[in-house]
Image (cartoon, rainbow, N blue to C red):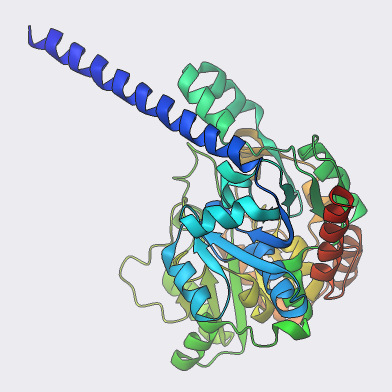
Length: 419
């Protein structure tokens, strides 16, 4: 009897949940169609990034450029994070909570939406009739499709799980997508096969690496705080890419001979510090209570934007993160740490390119080798020529005018739609 009651209760909960989803779908789709009837203004542009949770990446730097250099455009930043909204408003920028009345009205009046992941970076339900500008968040090294092993697991999963997985894939039906070079444009055209245009402009976020004059007031507060604690000559930054579900428990530290005291002592000898910025979904560094004064592990909320930090970095350590394509613009050493490359390309993602051909730096198989290669990097940099070759291949523009070029592309797009 109790089992029957439990079954009926579960069925009722499922029915209510399905009904709620249906009502939400009807409401949001109604708002979407209404948004297509509202006249759009060419001088209102809406920005957002990372599902509305961060003020970071390419949209951030294009937003700052347009605000400072193109005052005829009304720029509006939308976010799900009210702290970000309050901070931007306190600095004199227009920013609104994504689902507030002001946020919805601005979205419905804007001529274009500008984002780094997908339309959900701004307001997904007010986008009918607006132009969509996909700035993305990295030169493609990894394919967006899951690796064959993961595809097999998805086929074995339930219909609901497969539907959810498909729902997380980026919508590629955009008016314009940007790329950093003719080489990366080809990869972008594969990834965003339905995009109407892929424009080679360079990434706005790389303007900070080039020292754009309109970004002179942008300082790395995180490094400034560290300098108050400790004196150092070299800054090493470890930025591993994220692993997919089922692999996020991989320990990239102790699992690959990371011994905190040994690393800390080596850093002391080199008069250096190490900043570890692991992906928030992956296993974080654990010092096991040891006092490691030269190793810093900021949380995502402490360091949502790594680009001011990249400018201060002397040697980058990474595996399959496309951030190294941007870092090449600084012409500084890179130590590659593809500890799990065979498992990665099998269980996570395949790569667009032969890894060794596009990674201009020494490769380490564990942290003992990383320490040895860091010492070599600051004493004798032997990869400069190879870095220049790869940089020229993947970064057509090596100036600080990427934001300006993206701005011109968007203006042309809007003018073509509203002659």
